[in-house]
Image (cartoon, rainbow, N blue to C red; front, side, top):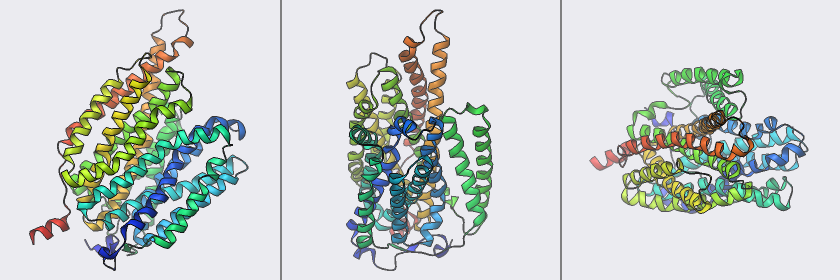
Length: 492
């Protein structure tokens, strides 16, 4: 397959002469605040219901719409990074995010706030693929682990501090300050990138397949929206809004896959799955995202529903593990460069399985320090698995597949995240219902709420334990990847 028509070509200058640090800093600043924004607003939802005079189901569109836009845009990023330069893509993404942040800060009501959130989501949806593709082009395989680990710090650290930071801000300021305080940093990111971000690839401007874009939008958008609606409790699978959009999305996705395998210049080249380590990476990342969301989604319910903790206190309890996960990402990246993926992924999946087992044994009497330690351990395990696995899988791809590989993995993570939230919440809810059905006659349901939450969480973590066991099996098939270019160079 001709590189000139399937991917961004190599840079027209010697990458060895490019100053990588300013480019990396530009990417980190932009990514940090765009990703931070994903978790910054959720904690303000109860207050926004009152101040904006809307129902909780209506307000949920601020989260659902955000995830929907990101899920639709990421697949198209494989095409966009081949049509525009690194600077154009980054400045365009951060420009959209900055404008969206300003619109949110100045919004007089829900409708304008939603428009601002969708603009922010558009910027975020373009940011991650640009960042990862730039790292793949900028760093050789033997140095990518450390670079991707630094990016992993941002990806995990930003959403980790979001709820806690938001809680602090809302203690003393109104909700609009969640956007006012982000705005100057977003502007700084644009200015910094304007002066220091350099192009690292040349646009090849492949043919635009409009039908693929339409099928991608309906397919990924329908699945993300359908599962997000299920998680919001819109009547379960019997509700037409849920099963209708999932069926439509699934059908469009099947047609999308068929078309990508037939056209000469696919929107998302699924031939990347011919490389076994990339395929293994995709499966492991889906499992890890499901496991991650089982933790991030279920623990707040446990802390607030069973242990009667405040939202701010819940955020503080989960903060150490999330921060440690972020700080360990660069360390794991360097260890990956030195020892390869197996030395991290195998013990990481084993640790993950052990911790998930202990989560299935927690009770109302489980102490807060114990819960904090378990959360720290699971976040350490995730840091040992996610970035090393992702970097290793992308390393096996030829350079022409970089835009497609990053788009595929980012899309799968978005879809897995949407499915994970709804899947584990529905399991927890069913567990609670079964617990109440088993209560003795005359028992006070109100007093049984903490125990019912624990019962539901047990059921959900039991499924998470099953995912973790599968991850252990897959981990033993992981080995250090080499790109075809590197193998050919070594042979010569």
